[in-house]
Length: 346
Image 1 (cartoon, helix red, strand yellow):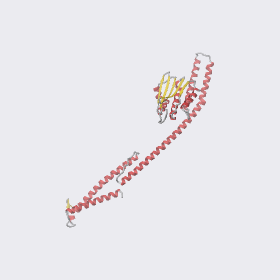
Image 2 (cartoon, helix red, strand yellow):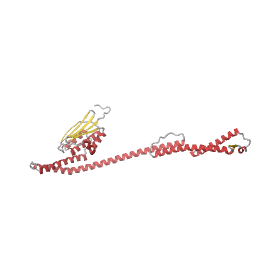
Image 3 (cartoon, helix red, strand yellow):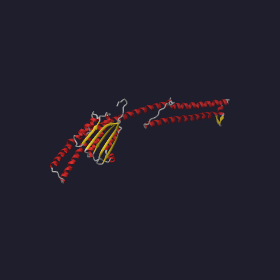
Image 4 (cartoon, one colour):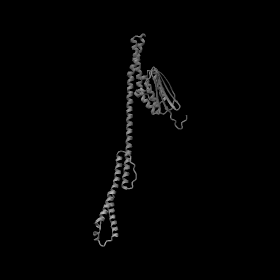
C-alpha cells in the first residue's frame, strides 16, 4: 500500500471511529425515543445528524493535516539529503521506523557509495594518466636535452677549444710586452676560457650523469675525475662509503651536480673541494670553492638552481646552508639525518 492510499484510509478510519464514538456517547447520555429524534435533537442549535458527522469530519481533516505535515517534513529531509548528495557531500544514513522512508534512505546510501567508488576510480585514473603523461614529458625533455648537449659538444664546445688553442699559440709566439694589443689578446683568451667553463657547466646541466646502479661514492668520484680532465681547476675530494637509500643518494648527487655547475658558470674559482662524510647519524656533503662569492639573500630569490637544491634537500628531510663572502669563495653544506632501522647493527 502506498503512502497516499494509507493516508486516505487512515483519515477515513479516524473520522469513522470518531463518528461512532461520539454517537455512542451521545446515545448513552441521551437515549433515543425514535429515529426521528436524530433530526429533532439539537447540539449547538444544529440537528444532531449534522453536527456529529461534521465534528468527526473536521477532526479527521485536522488529523490529515497533521499527518500530511509530518510526511512533508520527511520528504523535505529526503530532498535535502538528495541535494547534499548532488553536491558531493557525505550524508549520514540512519535506520528509519517507517518502511518506505527506510527504503529510500537505503537506496540513497547505495547511490552515495556508488558515487564514492566512481569518484575514487576517476581520481585514480586521472592520477595514473597524469603520472604517465609526466613520465612521457620527462622522457621527451631528457631526450631533447641530450640532443642539445650532443650538438653543443660536437660544434660549439669543439670550436671554443680550437679557438682557445689558437689564442694560446698566438700569445706564446708574441714577445712579452704591456702594449695594448697584448692586453686585448689576453682578454680574448680569458673570455674564451670562461666561455669554455660556461659551456662545460651547461653540458653538465643539460645532460647530468645518473648514478645508474653505482653507489653515491662511485658516482661522485667519477663525476669529479671527469671534471678534472676538462677544466684546469684544482679539484680535491674526500668521499666516504655511506650506505643510503637510492632516493637520498640521487638527491645528494643532483645537488652536487647543480653546485658544481654553479661554480663553473659563476664563481671564477681556481679550486674546488668536495666532502662527503657521516658524523653523528648525519650525512654531510660540503662543496667549497675559492671564487668571487655572491650575496646569498639575492641568490636565493633570483636563482632557480639554488631553489632547486633547497627543495631537494627538504624532500629527503635535510637542510641546506650556503655561506658566501665576496672574493673569498662559497661553501655549500647539506646535512641529512640517517634514519635508524630497527634491527640494524652499527
